[in-house]
Length: 189
Length: 393
Image (tube, rainbow over all chains, first blue to last red; front, side, top):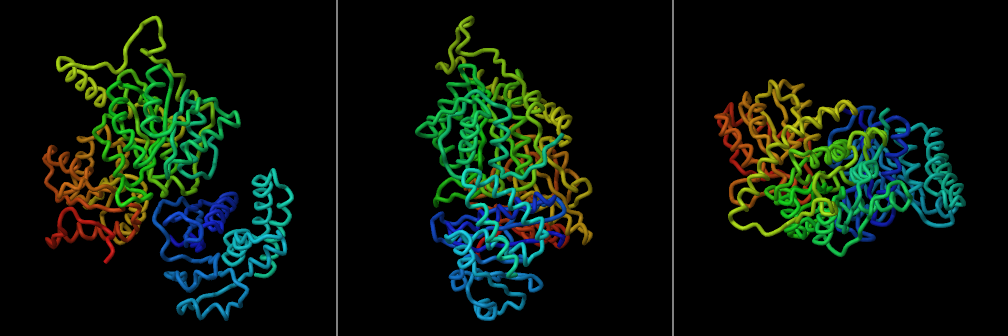
């Protein structure tokens, strides 16, 4: 059973957590895996907490429930730490990555006693440095790939470049910035 | 060669529509089916199919326009969910009684209220007596496969009935998963060109569609509909057999999962069946003889076949994702129980309600149901009928 890697995303409506989860599913699919990427919708409005999920497996995935005991958690918005129990059910052998300028030691006290690995990535700094604007989802996508190892880093970069070329066919100027954002995260983690 | 892809359920159904390239699609958006007309109109704008897309101002109009197109002799379809289907209620009956081979892509969503955008089956279950064939899917693959088979069933000369292809809102409609697509020409050859026998635009043989039927004729008309629904059973199996030939994927009225030697069975519809399969594998490893009967075809209702498949079990739990609010159970519970009674089966049968308004159904929920059935049979511990699963404490 546990050959399936389960990932839970916490973000706010409009930040692209759902898009990032779907992108991760895309990339993992391209490496030959069985994937699920799906959002959990509450009230649909900008800024409301949203959850998205990934299952990635070498085998066919049949379960269609939400993920309660994830191996990894991604927190796209640091302010959620106060209102959402982001480490609920999180595997202590897994990890959590939080979008924050703080260090993991500064974040850990907000994680309700979680004993597993804690990572932080300053997606704001990286995004502004590489894209000139704040789009946290590309950096956070690279972060979960780096800490989970679900996809080889080189494969991930190759697949993402192809994906961006397709997605931004009419805006090729943003491809390099996005690729640089991914590379910067992979170097830091 | 099958095409390995990853698509959401809505994308999968839209892709099937593109491959079939029907003549007319009137539609009005409603969550969670909105993406289907969105994707199809994009395909049309890109010149990938030449379906005539008609944006309308309501679902009453979308189904009315679909009926008009179908009566005129076009292959027509629409998509909707929940309250959208409720607004086309009258037209559902008009489509079926006029024997129009329309296909409706239904993305199941709770019917108000309280207002809720998430999955349950209260929309299509409410329409179970409208005269439509209803086919349900566990995942994106089945939604796609069912859609590819739909027109072959609807347009068959022994059937001539509209078909509802149902999938679970958000759970499958918005979940991206792996899927195997068929090639365009394989789908086109399988579905074939539509050659209606009688249609309004045929000036050779003028006809009327939907005239008033006095009491002298009305009942014969309903009997003919009933016969057509009965005929659909064989056609559904024949089309599924032919579909297996092009896809390698086999379908029937229902899927039996580890049911053959099962003492305890769950009967259910839709995406939660996949979750139950994981529970079954887990419990089988612990030596529990548990199995699943997943309904694919709810209309026509395969009464005898269901009873035959369940006859050797000791207890059956029927799980409804809609409540009839009649004080004693859900629609699937009532019909499966009746089927077992008519087949003189005497096992214990309990009806559960789950997953309303998107309430999650977990592997543990399925395990608990099986355990309750076992407790009932071995220790006489009564769980009570008509139990709600997963209520907040």
